[in-house]
Length: 71
Image (cartoon, rainbow, N blue to C red):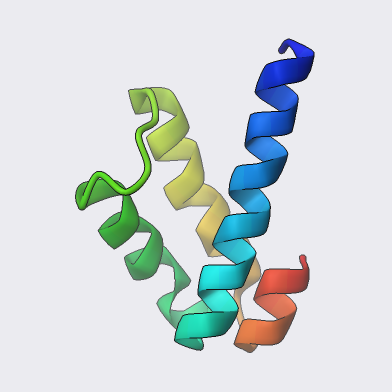
């Protein structure tokens, strides 16, 4: 991954954390929230990354929005 890609990924993660806090998304709703973002084309990702994003969302079980965003 190039430096530009790493910076873009870091920026995207910060934006996602802000959206999670803004929308009050807890871990129980994170997977559906990620699917909605991906399906509404707010986030354009290759297919493998889309799958990884959905699977990663499952790793936050039992966390409130603030903890989801901080992780």
